[in-house]
Image 1 (cartoon, rainbow, N blue to C red):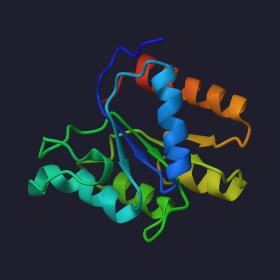
Image 2 (image 1 turned 90 degrees about the vertical axis):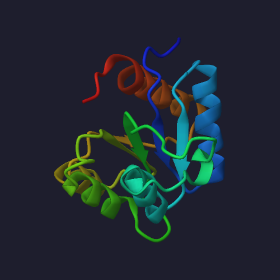
Image 3 (image 1 turned 90 degrees about the horizontal axis):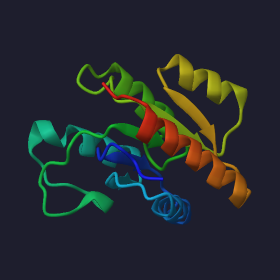
Image 4 (image 1 turned 120 degrees about the horizontal axis):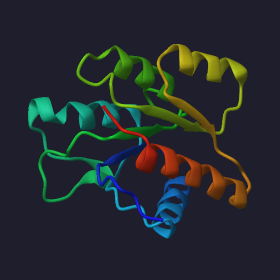
Length: 154
């Protein structure tokens, strides 16, 4: 499987273990999209607003480019240090220049209140992180097939 689009994916994940597993699975699926990572809410806001301020790239996204292309999709964990994912979701969907970026929540919470809240605040998808490795692989495969291959971003 190879992706047709090579647009960046922004992963907002504070767990190194979860991020490495996600990277490993995507590599196995031959995902060609550049993957950038932010580990907390402040980094997300800085990363996404850097085009406006010409700041150098941060975190896992650090490379020779000062300005990173706009992500085609954001994979967002809810439970983050500092500004949590719920607040990030709300802020991004209220920002005129960022609200069109699809945001898929990827979290361990299967709480119906979290799910309802995220959709009310503009989430484009909600995936519960399975604890089982096989289920995690199926979930990531479904994400890749839809959001990185089939979906046409704005």
